[in-house]
Image (cartoon, rainbow, N blue to C red; front, side):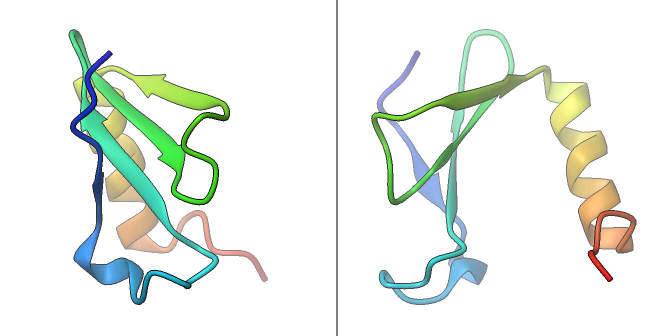
Length: 64
């Protein structure tokens, strides 16, 4: 894994409780909770990450 984790500029302030960070991994993309950087991580292929982002943007994963 890499140590180059980034938080989205859309995540808001540093105290925002709904923040995730992403990092480019070989191969794929890693996702982790910014409040618990040493906790669990999700690893997706580049295609899988793109599909996840597309579903988030379309609202397909919205609760409610």
